[in-house]
Length: 71
Image 1 (tube, rainbow, N blue to C red):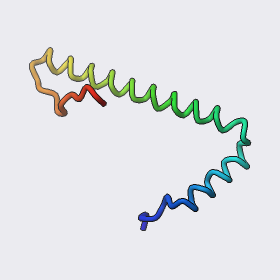
Image 2 (cartoon, rainbow, N blue to C red):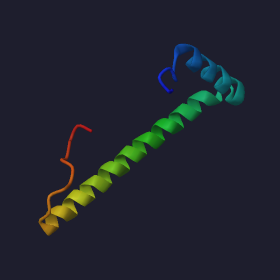
Image 3 (tube, rainbow, N blue to C red):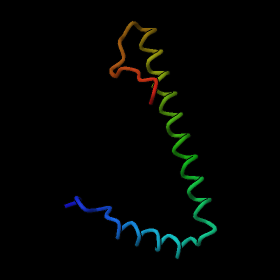
Image 4 (cartoon, rainbow, N blue to C red):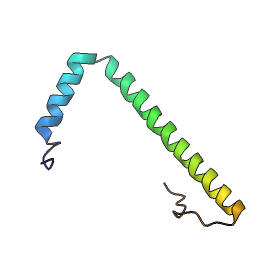
């Protein structure tokens, strides 16, 4: 059912609708805000993972997932 969800024509229609709704000057601001939000989310997830790993080590437990420094 969702195999062809993001075909080039669909993406073009989404871009056109976004331009009509937000305008060409607002799109870069929205993209910047979205990028910063994703960056903050990743940092928060990393911090939570580090905190969980540290507390597990303090208790002598092994964390459920291995720590990957490149993520």
